[in-house]
Structure formats: structure tokens, C-alpha cells
Length: 210
Image (cartoon, rainbow, N blue to C red):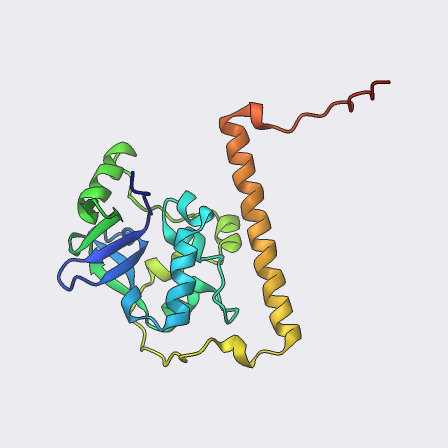
């Protein structure tokens, strides 16, 4: 059976592969924000695809939830960097086909409709409104709610960390490690909530037999 991968799709009118960052834009339910992965330079493409395929990204309902706290190889925040470099494209949801595996596809407009119906007609994407949540999430809602197409910036063909010194690179790696540690802790909590029997048991070690 083919493995399902969330957040990946295809732009209908061009046939190009993409990653759907926001399945719909607040107050614009017929629009979404995507990244044309075929337009990315190699190192950015690899970073985005590896992020999409990660356990944490697959556990998220929307890719922006993961991208807002993920880092590119050059140490920049993934969501903010994609926006600043003009790599987020606004598309009609009807022009995006979600392709979770090689034998399944569904139009994004139809998928969002199903999600809204299951959520009691709430938006398919509901960014956090609580100030504490926004601060913790680096205010990802600004990217979608206040979205305007920025002027594209030149992206180096090589990752920026090629010019980073060892100290800067070590700090970047440490920040990534802390992010993944928190993600692992969150996933463990979710697993235990679903199945309390997974909670580690404390007990006395077995006595050694003579």
C-alpha cells in the first residue's frame, strides 16, 4: 500500500509539483499559498521536501504550522524566508490538486469543503489568535492574513552556511536540535494521551536470583 504524504500537490494548469503551505487564506477561502518546489534551488528544495516528510510535519494539519518553527540550512526561518524571497505563490484552491500518493488525488477546493463540513463550517485553516500562541509561533498569521506578493529576491545556488564560521554553524545546529527535542516531547505526549498504557512505568528493579 502506498504511503500517504500530506501537504504535497500539483498545480493543475502547469502540472508542476508544489507544497501547500496554507490550505486557505483567512477571509479568502478560495485562495491558498503554495511553494512551487520545482522552482527552488537544490538546497532549498531538499530542505523543504525533507521538512514535509518529517514526522512532525506529517502530524501537523497545515505545513505552515511546522514551517513557522523550522530552519533552512542557512539558519533562516523557513516560513519567513519563503515569504521574504517571494517563493510563496497565491493560487486558487481549485487550481491545486493534492496528491498524497501515486494513486490518489483530490482537488484542494473539495478537500477544504470536506474539512469545513467536519468542523461545523469553520474555516479549513484557522491560524492562532491568542497573543501567546502567536508569539510562540513567530506570528505565522502575518504571512497569510497580510499576504502581498513580495519582490523576488536572488537566492544563492549554494546554502548560506557555506560562509558561516564554526561557531555560527554550531549555534544553528543547536537551535535545530532544541526544536526537534520539543517536537519529540510533544509527539510523546500526544501518543500517551491516545494510549495511556504507553506512559513509562516506574517500578523497582527485579531482584537478582541466587
